[in-house]
Image (cartoon, rainbow, N blue to C red; front, side):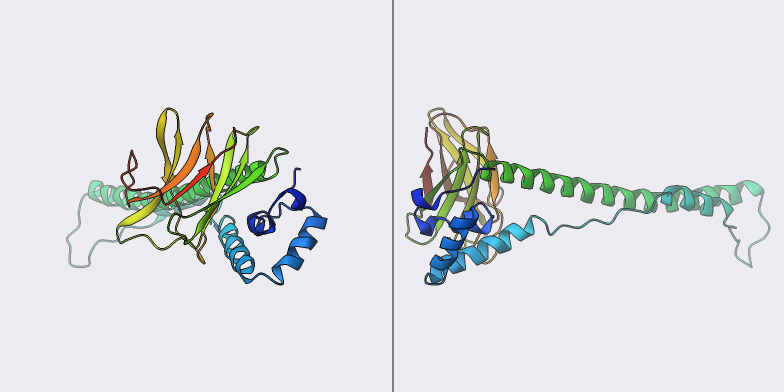
Length: 246
């Protein structure tokens, strides 16, 4: 697995690699000595680790095996009692109420199963995203870049792999966007601007790692402030721009 080299990288730019365990043992030891005298890197590293931990924070509860069959069996054997004051009724209404009760119980069971399935699907998506991030960080040709915000507050960190045609993007210390707005990530190249997606909410001042695929020659990444629903084209000035190596 590829690792970042201390010798060719500004130590202040290694917080992301350190937090995501992308340094070899020697460079890790050197960076930890750097951390002892750099409060800014300590804060950024702490935020990045908290954000990365979110990728593994999802849990899911799967219904027990055979839940559906047990629910149906219980419904089929449950006696449907008539009110005490009601006169005797033909058998077919009792069957109708029994079927309705069984359908109601089945609907609850299927809804529960649907929720569990959706949660499991989301977990699989997060695991796939985590693997994609790890593939970029561990690529032999992985390159790290940073870009300062135009306002001077905040910065973006990019780890890119030409081989994977993908990059990992995070931000730190960006100011909170205005109400009903969010930060949106873009790929900008010779063919125009392409929306990548809305940045996740920041935790501890740092946004969780975001995987970006489908890179093209001449692309650069940029961030703008857009309405919370997102935009098809940038409507606001670029907050951060990071040029990608060709």
